[in-house]
Image (tube, rainbow, N blue to C red; front, side, top):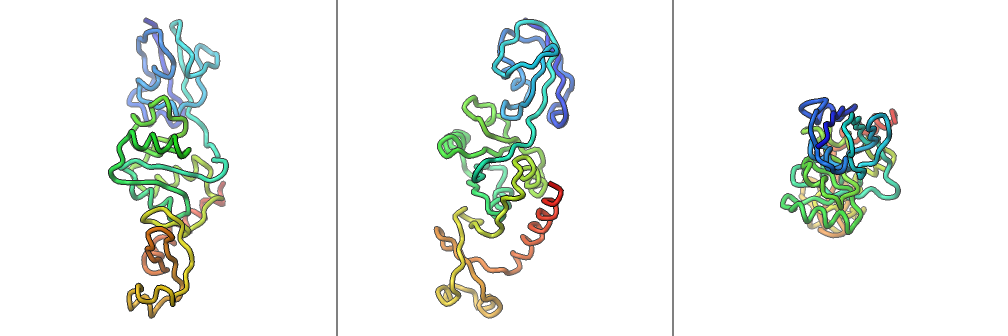
Length: 234
């Protein structure tokens, strides 16, 4: 057994109940050690063991001091594609509202989330550390906040997405794209009051849900404006 003292840096301080952590560990990888304390490997950035950089796959072979730094913000190349766990329904709606391809169901099993993420090259967003500890997962983020609005800022900042926002281009219900449609084509499906007060309508290409800039749009518009203002800082 080896005596190891772990110092978690920066934002990790808020994820660990006790810092530093002093433990005895067997001959094993730094990945196993750090995940055993509670930090998924998808969150780990630089590791420094006894004043030398090490990889998470390296095996500990002596007593020492380990400094653990979180990953920095990482821009997503190409289209941002996410899959969210059952705890993040409102965040899923916010991401779709801003135009991001976001899969979510309130009955996803963990194994299902992992399989879809690997098959479709999606980033897993979750409040469950266990999902992200699976060795096959390469891209995932542990959401810190319990507040959906703050969660949205976390994701946009973490993956540098502010310039990729395309508001109101994706269905909030099923995630498919919505398109502008002539009012006359869906006239019979529009509520009488909305038919009278609005002329611009959108429809989902998959589930055929209709959208217009009513009271719900005013609520979303406030969030979009807040996000756009924050974008000026990045």
